[in-house]
Length: 158
Ligand SMILES: CC(C)(COP(=O)(O)OP(=O)(O)OC[C@H]1O[C@@H](n2cnc3c(N)ncnc32)[C@H](O)[C@@H]1OP(=O)(O)O)[C@@H](O)C(=O)NCCC(=O)NCCS
Image (cartoon, rainbow, N blue to C red; front, side, top):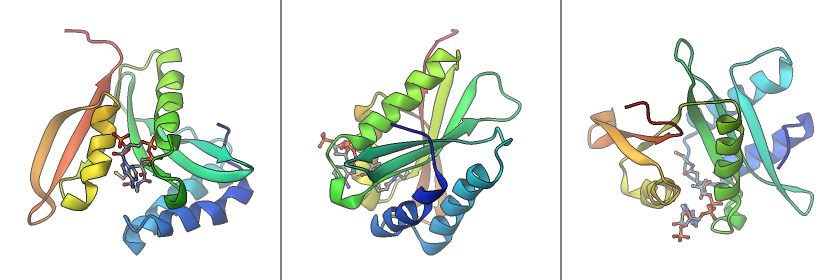
């Protein structure tokens, strides 16, 4: 696990495209977020963790504090190399993200995904990692495609 470096961009682009999970607009959006981190050393909106295997990028996670909230973070993107899916890199990235957030007293980490059948394994990945479905907006992305919000709470104030 390490921080993002400029040389990682081509490998990350390859991973995002290779996953076959993202439209070209989504890949462009993911790269824009990464470029934000790479080009502006002072930005504090996003944080990236890179998983590495045998000197290759195995995957990444990008998350950030939700503005105007107290200790609430959003996980914006996670993707691992399709050749390495199911080998534990996704789990390691989630665990490292959670470790960093707990260390700074974060209250919760939220993430969103689609209800489409294609994302069934992704949803399983989150549920297995201890994330709970807390909200669902029907037909959010397009008719028949709901937005599901998963949450992990580090402290329960209630
Ligand atoms: C979802 C994702 C980040 C998980 O990373 P990973 O490295 O494959 O995950 P791990 O090896 O740590 O965990 C494996 C678990 O995740 C689930 N999983 C989700 N997608 C999977 C995939 N494409 N291949 C294998 N396992 C997958 C498996 O069910 C597995 O659970 P199991 O052990 O009970 O079978 C990764 O598969 C990925 O990049 N998918 C495409 C992009 C995506 O959907 N990103 C999230 C957008 S909301």
